[in-house]
Length: 142
Image 1 (cartoon, rainbow, N blue to C red):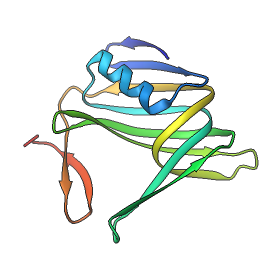
Image 2 (image 1 turned 30 degrees about the vertical axis):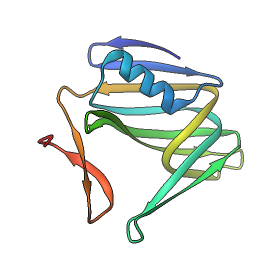
Image 3 (image 1 turned 135 degrees about the vertical axis):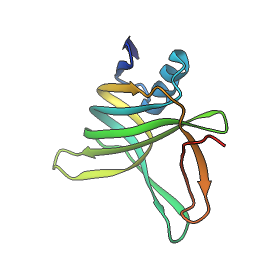
């Protein structure tokens, strides 16, 4: 992984064989980034994505070992109880243009990953919501 910071943005390149979520966490820790938006493209050959069923309050995930182009990766960096909280979603298309998408758990880069992290000047927390079973934005950080 290599990156360069430009004021409130970080341009990040994640290299072949590196794991995306871990690389993003490492960079955010090095740069002390606690609130940000994330966008990326690239290619993967090993990824795990999931879906949360709000009615059942259950999370399921699938692991894929296929060569795929990342057509979109979007997400946020926030905090929950003083810890970094990444919320990332990814879509990836295989050679037949079938698209796989969901909440990103892990992804290993097959060629390169180009990522832009836009730092938010402020603090955004997370708080568990009983109704949805999700950790939602908390703006007052209480």
